[in-house]
Image 1 (cartoon, rainbow, N blue to C red):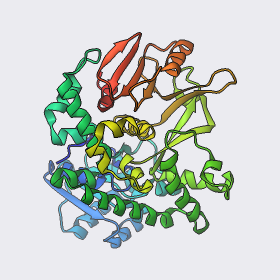
Image 2 (image 1 turned 135 degrees about the vertical axis):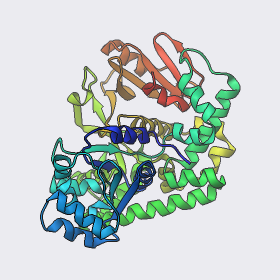
Image 3 (image 1 turned 90 degrees about the vertical axis):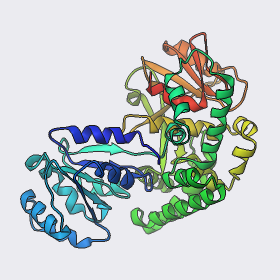
Length: 434
Protein backbone atom coordinates (compact mmCIF):
# COMPACT_ATOMS: atom_id res chain seq x y z
CA UNK A 1 0.00 0.00 0.00
CA UNK A 2 1.26 3.47 -0.89
CA UNK A 3 1.35 5.89 2.04
CA UNK A 4 0.64 9.41 0.80
CA UNK A 5 2.33 12.33 2.52
CA UNK A 6 -0.94 14.26 2.33
CA UNK A 7 -2.48 11.76 4.74
CA UNK A 8 -0.81 13.39 7.75
CA UNK A 9 -2.47 16.67 6.78
CA UNK A 10 -5.83 14.90 6.81
CA UNK A 11 -5.08 13.55 10.28
CA UNK A 12 -4.16 17.03 11.52
CA UNK A 13 -7.39 18.39 10.06
CA UNK A 14 -9.33 15.65 11.82
CA UNK A 15 -7.86 16.61 15.20
CA UNK A 16 -9.03 20.23 15.02
CA UNK A 17 -11.88 21.11 17.36
CA UNK A 18 -13.66 23.08 14.67
CA UNK A 19 -13.47 21.82 11.12
CA UNK A 20 -13.87 23.77 7.96
CA UNK A 21 -15.19 21.46 5.24
CA UNK A 22 -12.22 20.17 3.26
CA UNK A 23 -12.16 20.39 -0.53
CA UNK A 24 -9.80 17.87 -2.17
CA UNK A 25 -8.33 19.25 -5.38
CA UNK A 26 -6.11 17.72 -8.02
CA UNK A 27 -6.15 16.13 -11.45
CA UNK A 28 -8.26 13.10 -12.22
CA UNK A 29 -6.96 9.77 -10.89
CA UNK A 30 -4.41 11.19 -8.43
CA UNK A 31 -5.90 9.22 -5.52
CA UNK A 32 -8.26 11.70 -3.87
CA UNK A 33 -11.08 9.22 -3.21
CA UNK A 34 -8.71 6.53 -1.96
CA UNK A 35 -6.98 8.72 0.62
CA UNK A 36 -10.30 10.04 1.97
CA UNK A 37 -11.63 6.51 2.40
CA UNK A 38 -8.39 5.62 4.16
CA UNK A 39 -9.04 8.47 6.59
CA UNK A 40 -12.60 7.20 6.99
CA UNK A 41 -11.25 4.04 8.60
CA UNK A 42 -10.20 6.15 11.60
CA UNK A 43 -13.80 7.27 12.25
CA UNK A 44 -16.64 5.36 13.89
CA UNK A 45 -18.39 5.50 10.53
CA UNK A 46 -17.82 6.84 7.06
CA UNK A 47 -20.81 8.08 5.07
CA UNK A 48 -19.93 8.30 1.38
CA UNK A 49 -22.29 9.92 -1.10
CA UNK A 50 -21.33 9.64 -4.76
CA UNK A 51 -23.11 12.55 -6.43
CA UNK A 52 -22.71 10.97 -9.87
CA UNK A 53 -24.28 7.59 -9.07
CA UNK A 54 -26.90 9.02 -6.69
CA UNK A 55 -28.07 12.25 -8.36
CA UNK A 56 -31.20 12.29 -6.18
CA UNK A 57 -29.07 13.70 -3.37
CA UNK A 58 -29.25 17.09 -5.10
CA UNK A 59 -32.91 17.45 -4.11
CA UNK A 60 -31.89 17.48 -0.44
CA UNK A 61 -29.85 20.63 -1.04
CA UNK A 62 -32.37 22.24 -3.38
CA UNK A 63 -34.94 23.00 -0.68
CA UNK A 64 -32.92 25.33 1.54
CA UNK A 65 -29.50 25.49 3.19
CA UNK A 66 -30.57 24.59 6.73
CA UNK A 67 -27.72 22.30 7.79
CA UNK A 68 -29.76 20.66 10.55
CA UNK A 69 -32.41 19.61 8.04
CA UNK A 70 -29.79 18.59 5.46
CA UNK A 71 -28.03 16.29 7.95
CA UNK A 72 -31.36 14.78 9.00
CA UNK A 73 -32.36 14.11 5.40
CA UNK A 74 -28.93 12.74 4.46
CA UNK A 75 -29.16 10.27 7.33
CA UNK A 76 -32.55 9.12 6.05
CA UNK A 77 -31.27 9.03 2.46
CA UNK A 78 -28.23 6.88 3.29
CA UNK A 79 -29.71 4.88 6.16
CA UNK A 80 -26.68 5.78 8.28
CA UNK A 81 -26.22 7.91 11.36
CA UNK A 82 -24.34 11.18 10.93
CA UNK A 83 -22.90 12.14 14.30
CA UNK A 84 -20.59 15.18 14.68
CA UNK A 85 -17.20 14.07 16.00
CA UNK A 86 -17.78 10.42 15.05
CA UNK A 87 -18.78 10.52 11.38
CA UNK A 88 -16.79 11.47 8.29
CA UNK A 89 -19.24 12.75 5.68
CA UNK A 90 -17.71 12.41 2.21
CA UNK A 91 -19.24 13.76 -0.99
CA UNK A 92 -17.49 12.26 -4.02
CA UNK A 93 -17.83 13.38 -7.65
CA UNK A 94 -19.05 16.68 -6.26
CA UNK A 95 -18.87 18.34 -9.67
CA UNK A 96 -22.22 16.68 -10.39
CA UNK A 97 -23.91 18.49 -7.48
CA UNK A 98 -22.75 22.13 -7.23
CA UNK A 99 -25.58 22.68 -4.72
CA UNK A 100 -23.51 20.80 -2.16
CA UNK A 101 -20.57 23.15 -2.65
CA UNK A 102 -22.80 26.16 -2.01
CA UNK A 103 -23.86 24.66 1.32
CA UNK A 104 -20.34 24.03 2.62
CA UNK A 105 -19.97 27.41 4.36
CA UNK A 106 -23.05 26.69 6.46
CA UNK A 107 -21.66 23.36 7.64
CA UNK A 108 -18.75 25.26 9.17
CA UNK A 109 -20.90 28.03 10.61
CA UNK A 110 -23.57 25.77 12.13
CA UNK A 111 -21.93 22.38 12.82
CA UNK A 112 -18.15 22.88 12.90
CA UNK A 113 -17.73 19.64 14.86
CA UNK A 114 -18.82 17.59 11.84
CA UNK A 115 -16.08 16.35 9.52
CA UNK A 116 -17.01 17.01 5.88
CA UNK A 117 -14.83 16.33 2.82
CA UNK A 118 -15.70 16.81 -0.84
CA UNK A 119 -13.78 15.67 -3.92
CA UNK A 120 -14.38 15.36 -7.61
CA UNK A 121 -13.00 15.45 -11.10
CA UNK A 122 -12.50 18.83 -12.81
CA UNK A 123 -13.55 20.52 -9.60
CA UNK A 124 -11.82 23.79 -10.40
CA UNK A 125 -14.24 24.43 -13.26
CA UNK A 126 -17.21 24.12 -10.91
CA UNK A 127 -15.59 26.32 -8.27
CA UNK A 128 -14.99 29.02 -10.85
CA UNK A 129 -18.64 29.02 -11.90
CA UNK A 130 -20.29 29.08 -8.47
CA UNK A 131 -17.61 30.59 -6.24
CA UNK A 132 -16.98 29.43 -2.71
CA UNK A 133 -16.94 31.23 0.62
CA UNK A 134 -13.42 32.37 1.46
CA UNK A 135 -12.45 31.45 4.99
CA UNK A 136 -15.26 28.91 5.35
CA UNK A 137 -13.57 25.94 3.67
CA UNK A 138 -10.08 24.45 3.54
CA UNK A 139 -8.28 23.02 0.51
CA UNK A 140 -5.92 20.09 0.07
CA UNK A 141 -4.14 19.55 -3.24
CA UNK A 142 -3.10 16.08 -4.29
CA UNK A 143 -0.48 15.41 -6.95
CA UNK A 144 0.81 12.14 -8.44
CA UNK A 145 2.73 9.80 -6.15
CA UNK A 146 6.19 11.24 -5.50
CA UNK A 147 9.38 9.23 -5.85
CA UNK A 148 9.80 9.14 -2.07
CA UNK A 149 6.26 7.78 -1.62
CA UNK A 150 6.96 5.19 -4.33
CA UNK A 151 10.28 4.21 -2.75
CA UNK A 152 8.75 3.98 0.72
CA UNK A 153 6.35 1.31 -0.53
CA UNK A 154 9.31 -0.71 -1.87
CA UNK A 155 12.06 -0.13 0.69
CA UNK A 156 11.22 2.10 3.65
CA UNK A 157 14.76 1.88 5.04
CA UNK A 158 16.10 3.60 1.92
CA UNK A 159 13.47 6.29 2.33
CA UNK A 160 14.74 6.95 5.83
CA UNK A 161 18.32 7.00 4.52
CA UNK A 162 17.40 9.84 2.15
CA UNK A 163 15.58 11.74 4.90
CA UNK A 164 18.43 11.45 7.41
CA UNK A 165 21.44 11.79 5.13
CA UNK A 166 23.71 14.83 5.54
CA UNK A 167 23.74 16.56 2.12
CA UNK A 168 27.43 17.51 2.01
CA UNK A 169 28.61 13.92 2.48
CA UNK A 170 28.51 11.23 -0.24
CA UNK A 171 26.19 8.28 0.25
CA UNK A 172 27.56 4.74 0.28
CA UNK A 173 28.13 3.99 -3.40
CA UNK A 174 26.17 0.73 -3.39
CA UNK A 175 23.15 2.47 -1.84
CA UNK A 176 23.54 5.32 -4.31
CA UNK A 177 23.45 2.92 -7.26
CA UNK A 178 20.50 1.05 -5.83
CA UNK A 179 18.54 4.27 -5.43
CA UNK A 180 19.31 5.27 -9.03
CA UNK A 181 17.94 1.90 -10.15
CA UNK A 182 14.71 2.50 -8.23
CA UNK A 183 14.56 5.99 -9.69
CA UNK A 184 14.82 4.56 -13.21
CA UNK A 185 11.88 2.27 -12.43
CA UNK A 186 9.90 5.30 -11.27
CA UNK A 187 10.69 7.07 -14.55
CA UNK A 188 9.14 4.11 -16.38
CA UNK A 189 6.16 3.62 -14.08
CA UNK A 190 5.44 7.21 -13.08
CA UNK A 191 3.36 8.51 -10.20
CA UNK A 192 -0.26 7.81 -11.12
CA UNK A 193 -1.51 5.77 -8.13
CA UNK A 194 -3.15 3.00 -10.15
CA UNK A 195 0.03 2.47 -12.15
CA UNK A 196 2.40 2.58 -9.18
CA UNK A 197 0.22 0.09 -7.33
CA UNK A 198 0.20 -2.15 -10.40
CA UNK A 199 4.00 -2.18 -10.38
CA UNK A 200 4.16 -2.87 -6.66
CA UNK A 201 1.75 -5.79 -7.07
CA UNK A 202 3.04 -7.33 -10.29
CA UNK A 203 6.26 -5.67 -11.55
CA UNK A 204 4.62 -6.01 -14.96
CA UNK A 205 5.65 -3.00 -17.05
CA UNK A 206 3.35 -3.99 -19.91
CA UNK A 207 0.35 -3.93 -17.55
CA UNK A 208 1.47 -0.54 -16.22
CA UNK A 209 1.78 0.83 -19.73
CA UNK A 210 -1.72 -0.42 -20.52
CA UNK A 211 -3.02 1.62 -17.57
CA UNK A 212 -1.15 4.66 -18.88
CA UNK A 213 -3.02 4.38 -22.18
CA UNK A 214 -6.34 4.02 -20.35
CA UNK A 215 -5.63 7.11 -18.26
CA UNK A 216 -4.68 9.10 -21.34
CA UNK A 217 -7.94 8.08 -22.99
CA UNK A 218 -9.89 9.20 -19.91
CA UNK A 219 -8.18 12.61 -19.99
CA UNK A 220 -9.07 12.97 -23.66
CA UNK A 221 -12.70 12.11 -22.92
CA UNK A 222 -12.74 14.89 -20.33
CA UNK A 223 -12.09 17.51 -23.01
CA UNK A 224 -15.77 17.49 -23.93
CA UNK A 225 -16.72 18.17 -20.30
CA UNK A 226 -14.85 21.43 -19.89
CA UNK A 227 -14.20 22.76 -23.40
CA UNK A 228 -16.42 24.25 -26.04
CA UNK A 229 -16.81 22.15 -29.15
CA UNK A 230 -14.57 24.39 -31.28
CA UNK A 231 -11.78 24.25 -28.63
CA UNK A 232 -11.42 20.48 -28.50
CA UNK A 233 -9.11 20.27 -31.51
CA UNK A 234 -6.78 22.84 -29.91
CA UNK A 235 -6.74 21.04 -26.57
CA UNK A 236 -6.10 17.72 -28.28
CA UNK A 237 -3.15 19.24 -30.16
CA UNK A 238 -1.63 20.76 -27.02
CA UNK A 239 -2.16 17.52 -25.10
CA UNK A 240 -0.06 15.68 -27.69
CA UNK A 241 2.58 18.37 -28.18
CA UNK A 242 3.39 19.57 -24.67
CA UNK A 243 5.26 16.37 -23.69
CA UNK A 244 7.53 16.98 -26.69
CA UNK A 245 8.40 20.53 -25.62
CA UNK A 246 9.07 19.94 -21.93
CA UNK A 247 12.26 21.70 -20.87
CA UNK A 248 11.90 24.39 -23.53
CA UNK A 249 10.38 27.84 -23.43
CA UNK A 250 6.81 27.47 -24.62
CA UNK A 251 6.05 29.06 -27.96
CA UNK A 252 2.63 28.80 -29.58
CA UNK A 253 4.31 28.88 -33.00
CA UNK A 254 6.19 25.71 -32.04
CA UNK A 255 2.93 23.90 -31.37
CA UNK A 256 1.40 24.63 -34.77
CA UNK A 257 1.88 26.86 -37.77
CA UNK A 258 -1.81 26.51 -38.57
CA UNK A 259 -3.26 27.98 -35.37
CA UNK A 260 -2.64 31.30 -33.67
CA UNK A 261 -1.93 32.20 -30.07
CA UNK A 262 -5.44 33.58 -29.61
CA UNK A 263 -6.81 30.12 -30.48
CA UNK A 264 -4.31 28.03 -28.50
CA UNK A 265 -3.97 30.15 -25.35
CA UNK A 266 -7.52 29.54 -24.01
CA UNK A 267 -7.04 25.82 -24.66
CA UNK A 268 -3.79 25.80 -22.69
CA UNK A 269 -5.50 27.62 -19.83
CA UNK A 270 -8.13 24.87 -19.72
CA UNK A 271 -5.47 22.14 -19.48
CA UNK A 272 -3.80 24.06 -16.64
CA UNK A 273 -7.13 24.44 -14.84
CA UNK A 274 -7.73 20.70 -15.23
CA UNK A 275 -4.25 20.29 -13.66
CA UNK A 276 -3.12 18.10 -16.54
CA UNK A 277 -0.43 20.67 -17.32
CA UNK A 278 1.62 22.86 -14.98
CA UNK A 279 3.36 26.04 -16.08
CA UNK A 280 6.85 27.06 -15.03
CA UNK A 281 6.72 30.83 -15.04
CA UNK A 282 9.66 33.09 -15.84
CA UNK A 283 10.59 35.25 -12.84
CA UNK A 284 13.20 37.99 -12.59
CA UNK A 285 14.19 36.41 -9.28
CA UNK A 286 15.09 39.67 -7.55
CA UNK A 287 13.12 39.00 -4.38
CA UNK A 288 10.32 37.21 -2.59
CA UNK A 289 7.67 36.43 -3.63
CA UNK A 290 8.91 35.09 -6.93
CA UNK A 291 5.45 35.54 -8.43
CA UNK A 292 5.71 39.31 -8.08
CA UNK A 293 8.13 39.58 -11.03
CA UNK A 294 6.69 37.12 -13.51
CA UNK A 295 6.81 37.72 -17.24
CA UNK A 296 3.43 36.39 -18.48
CA UNK A 297 4.76 35.89 -22.01
CA UNK A 298 7.61 33.61 -20.98
CA UNK A 299 6.97 30.18 -19.49
CA UNK A 300 7.57 26.47 -19.86
CA UNK A 301 5.03 23.68 -19.49
CA UNK A 302 5.28 20.21 -17.98
CA UNK A 303 2.80 17.38 -18.12
CA UNK A 304 1.04 15.97 -15.06
CA UNK A 305 3.20 12.83 -14.93
CA UNK A 306 6.49 11.95 -16.61
CA UNK A 307 5.41 8.41 -17.51
CA UNK A 308 2.14 9.59 -19.06
CA UNK A 309 4.10 12.15 -21.07
CA UNK A 310 6.41 9.44 -22.40
CA UNK A 311 3.45 7.24 -23.28
CA UNK A 312 1.95 10.08 -25.33
CA UNK A 313 5.29 10.40 -27.14
CA UNK A 314 5.33 6.66 -27.83
CA UNK A 315 8.64 5.96 -26.10
CA UNK A 316 9.40 2.47 -24.83
CA UNK A 317 9.56 2.47 -21.00
CA UNK A 318 11.56 -0.75 -20.81
CA UNK A 319 14.80 1.15 -21.56
CA UNK A 320 14.61 2.81 -18.14
CA UNK A 321 14.90 -0.60 -16.50
CA UNK A 322 17.16 -2.42 -18.98
CA UNK A 323 19.62 0.46 -19.52
CA UNK A 324 19.06 2.74 -16.54
CA UNK A 325 22.44 4.52 -16.52
CA UNK A 326 22.46 5.36 -20.24
CA UNK A 327 18.81 6.37 -20.32
CA UNK A 328 19.12 8.72 -17.34
CA UNK A 329 22.06 10.45 -19.00
CA UNK A 330 20.29 11.00 -22.32
CA UNK A 331 16.89 12.25 -21.18
CA UNK A 332 17.46 15.84 -20.12
CA UNK A 333 13.94 17.12 -20.76
CA UNK A 334 12.32 14.28 -18.83
CA UNK A 335 14.75 14.75 -15.94
CA UNK A 336 13.88 18.45 -15.79
CA UNK A 337 10.16 17.65 -15.84
CA UNK A 338 10.69 15.06 -13.11
CA UNK A 339 12.26 17.65 -10.81
CA UNK A 340 9.30 19.95 -11.43
CA UNK A 341 6.87 17.13 -10.68
CA UNK A 342 8.74 16.43 -7.44
CA UNK A 343 8.77 20.10 -6.40
CA UNK A 344 4.99 20.18 -6.77
CA UNK A 345 4.54 16.90 -4.89
CA UNK A 346 6.47 18.07 -1.81
CA UNK A 347 5.07 21.59 -1.70
CA UNK A 348 2.54 22.77 0.90
CA UNK A 349 -0.62 20.83 -0.05
CA UNK A 350 -2.97 23.43 1.44
CA UNK A 351 -2.30 25.89 -1.41
CA UNK A 352 -1.81 25.45 -5.12
CA UNK A 353 1.90 25.38 -5.84
CA UNK A 354 3.66 27.46 -8.49
CA UNK A 355 6.89 26.76 -10.34
CA UNK A 356 9.39 29.38 -11.52
CA UNK A 357 12.53 29.55 -13.63
CA UNK A 358 14.99 32.29 -14.60
CA UNK A 359 16.19 33.32 -18.02
CA UNK A 360 18.41 36.11 -19.25
CA UNK A 361 18.54 36.85 -22.94
CA UNK A 362 21.06 39.25 -24.44
CA UNK A 363 23.44 39.28 -27.39
CA UNK A 364 26.60 38.65 -25.43
CA UNK A 365 25.49 36.02 -22.95
CA UNK A 366 22.31 34.00 -22.47
CA UNK A 367 21.64 32.19 -19.20
CA UNK A 368 18.87 30.00 -17.84
CA UNK A 369 18.21 28.29 -14.51
CA UNK A 370 15.67 25.46 -14.51
CA UNK A 371 13.91 26.32 -11.23
CA UNK A 372 13.89 28.97 -8.53
CA UNK A 373 12.68 28.19 -5.02
CA UNK A 374 12.10 30.30 -1.94
CA UNK A 375 14.35 28.80 0.74
CA UNK A 376 16.71 30.89 2.86
CA UNK A 377 16.15 33.55 0.22
CA UNK A 378 15.97 32.68 -3.48
CA UNK A 379 17.83 29.52 -4.42
CA UNK A 380 18.54 28.51 -8.05
CA UNK A 381 18.03 24.82 -8.91
CA UNK A 382 19.44 23.00 -11.92
CA UNK A 383 18.38 19.56 -13.16
CA UNK A 384 21.09 17.76 -15.12
CA UNK A 385 20.83 14.40 -16.86
CA UNK A 386 24.42 14.21 -18.11
CA UNK A 387 27.68 13.59 -16.28
CA UNK A 388 29.27 16.92 -17.22
CA UNK A 389 28.33 20.59 -17.16
CA UNK A 390 29.79 23.89 -16.10
CA UNK A 391 26.75 25.22 -14.19
CA UNK A 392 27.56 28.62 -15.68
CA UNK A 393 23.98 29.87 -15.50
CA UNK A 394 23.60 28.69 -11.93
CA UNK A 395 26.74 30.54 -10.89
CA UNK A 396 25.68 33.64 -12.79
CA UNK A 397 22.35 33.75 -10.99
CA UNK A 398 24.05 33.25 -7.60
CA UNK A 399 26.45 36.09 -8.34
CA UNK A 400 23.96 38.59 -9.76
CA UNK A 401 21.16 37.89 -7.27
CA UNK A 402 23.32 37.26 -4.20
CA UNK A 403 21.83 33.80 -3.57
CA UNK A 404 22.93 32.04 -0.39
CA UNK A 405 23.71 28.85 -2.36
CA UNK A 406 22.71 26.85 -5.42
CA UNK A 407 21.54 23.28 -5.95
CA UNK A 408 22.22 20.84 -8.75
CA UNK A 409 20.27 17.60 -9.17
CA UNK A 410 21.97 14.93 -11.24
CA UNK A 411 22.96 11.26 -11.22
CA UNK A 412 26.03 12.18 -9.15
CA UNK A 413 26.37 11.46 -5.45
CA UNK A 414 25.98 14.11 -2.75
CA UNK A 415 28.71 16.74 -2.59
CA UNK A 416 29.19 20.44 -1.87
CA UNK A 417 31.66 22.86 -3.43
CA UNK A 418 31.82 26.64 -3.69
CA UNK A 419 28.29 27.11 -2.24
CA UNK A 420 26.75 24.65 -4.70
CA UNK A 421 25.14 21.54 -3.27
CA UNK A 422 25.05 18.55 -5.57
CA UNK A 423 22.10 16.29 -4.79
CA UNK A 424 21.24 13.00 -6.49
CA UNK A 425 18.02 13.12 -8.53
CA UNK A 426 16.33 10.79 -6.07
CA UNK A 427 16.71 13.35 -3.28
CA UNK A 428 14.51 16.28 -4.39
CA UNK A 429 12.54 15.75 -1.18
CA UNK A 430 15.60 16.94 0.79
CA UNK A 431 14.74 20.52 -0.16
CA UNK A 432 11.62 20.21 1.99
CA UNK A 433 13.12 18.17 4.82
CA UNK A 434 16.01 20.38 5.91
